[in-house]
Length: 581
Image (cartoon, rainbow, N blue to C red; front, top):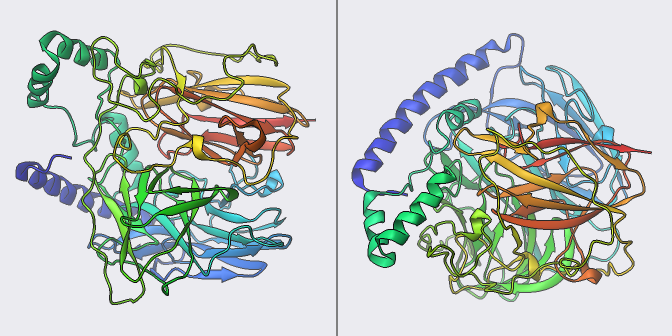
């Protein structure tokens, strides 16, 4: 991000203009609600426990950045209440929509009957203004999950919260204290305005653009011809190697459990205790890199499922992912630090033995540029004379064991379209399971990768796939168009799965953006190189220019959603899945 005083002044001016305009629009639209209840004031976020819950979707006045604006919230809370369930119970949730528009609640990662999944036009009609919809389903799992609206961009304006599910048997994770750490990117701007700006200028929020001075520096380090070729390659892709995130701290205030960095939320402990931190990324568009300087973290669960413990310094958490970690702090204050992938801002809080203690904030890391590997060029040591940047995985990128072998299962052909909506294509995408990703390479810290994850329970008896499907994640960054196999959701036929089959799904990311892909209703058993320990996840981060594979046991009838969880990618990068008998 450019911190030149002139740039800062310009940003502040534009922000003030934009916020004023958006506030006016937001308040105006709020007034169009007719008989809808009047907005309420923001309430403190709470935890609710039991088997029956009453949730209301509300227009709520919040003040995150110094101005009163309207949010869409659950029970007037930002984030919504944490719901604590118990595995084996049947839960009943009455959701009343007090918004002037239709809404919904989707239970992210929860295995349930499809008509309880909460996706409008796929699993139910949605909840009309003034109506109450009652969800009721048995709880068949435990761990850390979350919920959010699946209607329009309501998730961006506040309709989301955490789920904590207590196991019915002994918990493999032992701790003395247990905290939820939810991360979120709040904007005073109307979400539709953000999307409209991205459609007009996809780099509207990117203040980390290249300058003439950067080119001069590259000429000095690479030579004129190589530097020119380097730039030409990126230009042909109509991308910038500094385009790491579509929406940034220019408009976002990053929140931790609903608190700004200045408000400094606290997690308290007594010396000698084992603390469980349940990290949930409830953002609309922000990928966070999380660390607690001076303190090792032991990852014990991914997306609600226990994994073999991995001791690390840092982890990346994509939108919609969850990670549980155990920490054992000493008698001092620590900073829980979550910086956005493009380093335009951060969320932070204090982990300390006493409430009056406040942890110092570390400096943000500088942003790293994308590399040839992130372009899907595959090279890890440089192509065309370009500097790719070193990667942890070097020349031996970890890949599933079956990769390189002759396929033992048939690949089902799917429609593919190339054209104006697919200006990017990975020429040589690789499995990069042990690549921590751009921004985290060679930073001197032990960073979690997917290659580190092993299921806590054996998957040795899991059946092999019956067939495979390959899905390309595609787009045109300049025109902010996103799709799967070059076909946007509005033009795509549903994917057909057959009940009882075992699928292998391979994603090829033809773009230079990260896409966290989420399949509703069924688990994704990620291939990390150990057939006996396939990692069970609900959301899988697909790195730029890479491919990744997982297996799905098709054991849930009905219609399901399958999509990228970056909110503004979702209108195009989305599929309906039909599970047929």
